Image (cartoon, rainbow, N blue to C red; front, side, top):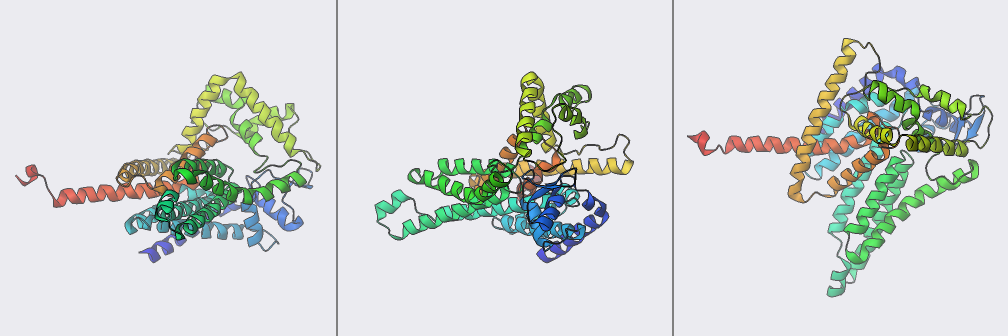
Length: 444
């Protein structure tokens, strides 16, 4: 069944990319621009309004690095981006199956089948954005968590080593710590794709400290953080040299914080509510008033721009704390909402039908995921469940303050499909058991 699943997935994603191919030219977040500049100048840079290319760390670098590598450092084309996303779709399905099948083959197949037609992934794969790559990275992190759990179960605690005078156990412990370093490095790579992954990694490090054997706790957490730092530090040093400040992630945080916390957005929420789309171009007067437009000539402006945007956002929060609290709830709802926003005031019947069909899909998936989470209590919530919950919590906390919408949860969707597969299998087994073992009342 796995081979037909890959064939169908390949056809579905290819068809989706073909019918939405015009979106590949819409470089909304300038990732394609960064990749092309990297090919042309061999420097991670952005193009200013005047045409000059300036060293930058405004966007996380992993996706542009990948596009530049795929293009052979020549020209980044829409076809190359489509191929990257198509391959990512197959990887997502394959990794979902691999992780689920570690528990049961049925779970792996069901989860892989569901993720292959995920509406968010299919839609955003048609844009030159990070959703598909970030989802692949998230699945690799979950695969690491399963392997760490398996290794931990075969690692003898230090107290038991001393009691039994075992000489081989310390080498097992060291191998386990080395594996934690690689796991931390994987989170470092993920943070270079989406900064929210760093918050997830911090929760994992805290979990390692508080969940391991008493005399090994600090070593596990430290090994994980060392692995993460080894990956992130060179990028931070590069930013200090070329951009003007040692920044471990990006200088995009201040603008993203301002985008979610400003007087114009708060006024929009008061007048129109959270179901109506607010457009970022309404922020332009505020940026002009404080001279925060992108300059036409290359200069080390990003650090100061980030600082001023952050300060404006904090000023808006302090001026209207009640609206900030309300907007925080709105951002959480937008992150996990099953119903996509209407992008047009007068949308066609087909668009509306697609939106509501998407909502029904996600409501059903959420229901099965809750059932699946309840089912996993029987095996003490394994590493897969706890690591996935940490991811959901970290993404929710980050996007409750910063800009948020449905696509921000895309990297977490395969984990939710795995839980939903648990739920579906549990419900099926329950009804099958009821059918084969009827009650006394049914027999009478």
